Length: 79
Image 1 (cartoon, rainbow, N blue to C red):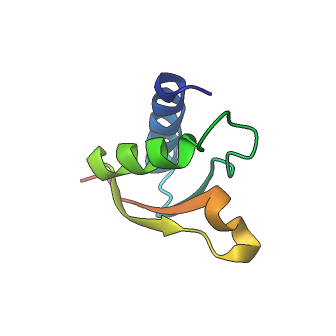
Image 2: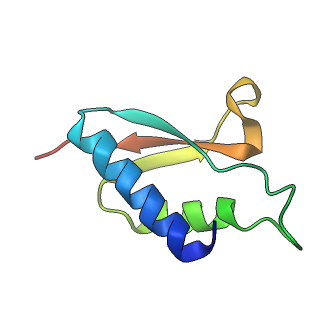
């Protein structure tokens, strides 16, 4: 996925999670082992989450849940 496609996909996922009433989700973006150069998606996901009004805290998943290849995200409830 490129940056733009990732923003669209993550945005849709977050909105679906919020609509479904979920409070915490796991985004699996991969480790970027097949990226030419440095991995891209982890940074794109972080950038999106920092700006998204529908998300709260987030961080790297623990090892058994994906480690640096996944990010947990708190979803803000609907007002």
